[in-house]
Length: 350
Image (cartoon, rainbow, N blue to C red):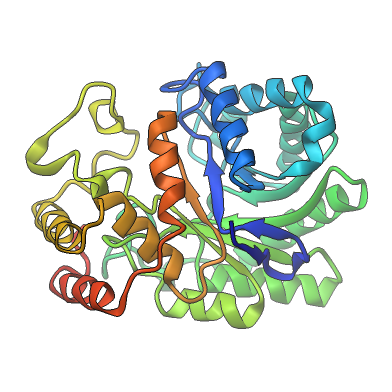
């Protein structure tokens, strides 16, 4: 296993991060225990979760994934320091979480305490804002014309950010969290938090996790360049585009028990005809070079300059083994050239 520095934190994390969002819906406590043990045995020392999980999010499954991880920690207290644990506070819009309100300083304090209780640990290594209070260009909102940034009150959001930073800083000073990160945010968000932390001598942003995969590369090059030069770790989530790049959903297929067979909160916005054609083209590249579609997609993501650690998730131990094995591969120049040709043909398929 290879490791990388987590931004300015000084922590060394595995290039693979174990995602957990299916634990509590598609995966049981026993499944989760097996995945954690396998991940640790392969040198993975980075686990990512969120208060909102399991997915798809519901009031009934809220907090379930953290509880499952907490049960493992409670059964293995001496092994807590073997991994970096990351969690997230949910943003606005979900009525059953703090009335659907914005992230505030008060919400941060309450959410951190609640997550610590469910996780049965004294500290969270990396605490992240799941999405910003302002609407951000994620979840298929990245096309021109969907958002009007000129109509956003940036000063008001900066004031909110300062309040959030002050609460995060308090959590760091009291030892409840060690570092903080962003998710589903933008270069403006990164740089505002850095400016505010420097201006007010508060905790500095360590990382950002955004969707990044062969079907969705909008963060390259501008946000990733920002991360590299600002010493902010870049953590891709959904490197298989919610499973699309495995090929299992081609031409409308919906395998029983798969994620796309379940109702999605934000709709199946990745399921477009252009995406379907792009996936078929990537499968042809994989077959041509003796790779599985999963190996192609994950190894490519791992080789993108500026990527720190890629968040993977699996609903079976067999899937997890295949996913982790992909990070042992180095794609040859000929493979990368073929991938680039497909990407030029389908740069923004959803």
